[in-house]
Image (cartoon, rainbow, N blue to C red):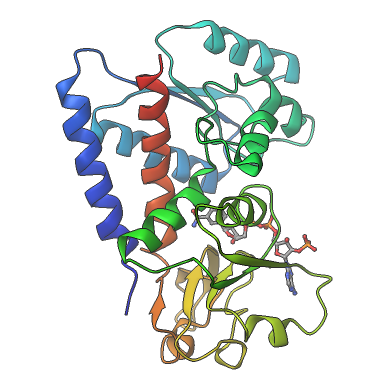
Length: 282
Ligand SMILES: NC(=O)c1ccc[n+]([C@@H]2O[C@H](COP(=O)([O-])OP(=O)(O)OC[C@H]3O[C@@H](n4cnc5c(N)ncnc54)[C@H](OP(=O)(O)O)[C@@H]3O)[C@@H](O)[C@H]2O)c1
């Protein structure tokens, strides 16, 4: 069965829109983009469009590729101090002369709707529920819950240990409320296949097209594909594929996310949810 993220995200956004319509004031999300990386521009535009759809004000701040780190940090500080700005997001990756960790730490943890601030990461690990959870892990959890896929007692194998997906997803699913058993694999993991084959739920966040093949997957497992990879097809037209060999893995999996239309839309929906959460706590 296909885990249709587009459909679930739409339902989440409709619910949010109804709540926002009922309030006099509107939430505001500030989105900062540095430079003109085409993928970043496309991600940012998608976020701005979703804001409009649900009734969140978006404030798009476009900065030149050579903007100084000092200037960027001072813009963030200004936004931190603005009462009517609920969320601040700086699109990654940043140019090499800007330290992304400094940027993440400068955003007020109370407006950190991406959930990357060390305080929010710490809260997630400790099981506090008042912090912001990074959007992709939150979106994956919402998707699994929506299809009533149980997590308690299940073995979740996450391939990829990034700070934005693998680590926070593991931190979220290992909590007492969820009670999954987690294994995180990475590029130094030995005999990956023997581990992935034991997964009841397999999450791939690697960034390599068709990395997870059918022989790496247990029959009846749930497969979540986070990867977004641009490849050029035999017809010379580029297309987006995930990290999972969808055609063959889908024959073995009980549930699987497509790419596009799986985790991606859920990530944006979670960003909208986090912005609304911040607005409610204004
Ligand atoms: N759908 C969405 O909303 C969304 C959100 C975020 C990211 N993404 C996509 O997801 C993909 C991964 O991004 P990310 O930021 O999570 O990760 P990342 O920072 O790109 O890192 C990739 C991870 O994969 C691991 N890896 C690489 N080769 C491996 C191998 N041969 N065996 C096992 N592990 C291996 C790396 O291990 P090491 O740590 O050892 O290097 C690393 O932990 C990308 O395609 C990205 O565009 C999608």
